[in-house]
Length: 126
Image (cartoon, rainbow, N blue to C red; front, top):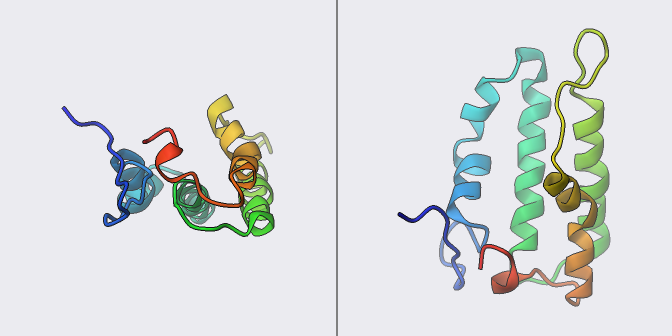
């Protein structure tokens, strides 16, 4: 059974990101948003879009403006995650795993060390 696959020639919609992540963050985004409290849905939708962009750029084979990428992944997405999902007691109800933390905090560094280029077939999906 095929769970996830990479598209090394970039003919598919998923680049090299893997079908499962592509389906969840892009194709089925609204289904995920549906299960979030109504007053958080717009922020959650934006969070999923930002995560999708971070992963899509990381797995591409294109040159990346690392400073713009850093701001997008580290500052905009992290800020969205930690400042928009509080409950009535002003306590955050959404958390992140160490993997998501690493993704948002350090993924731009990997592309920078790769000559400001996406990882392409060298990413974990490949």
